[in-house]
Length: 59
Image (tube, rainbow, N blue to C red):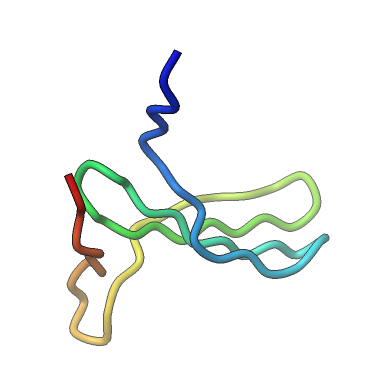
């Protein structure tokens, strides 16, 4: 079985209040994930102009 994970965690901070950045390896779109205790959520990471942050994708 190949390691074909679509998302890759590129940044992580914290233990109880966690902030992570995940990159979609197919589109390059970055997402920010935040959780605190039992609650959490994920959304697209935006730059200062309101555009999605996109990492170049290597095929």
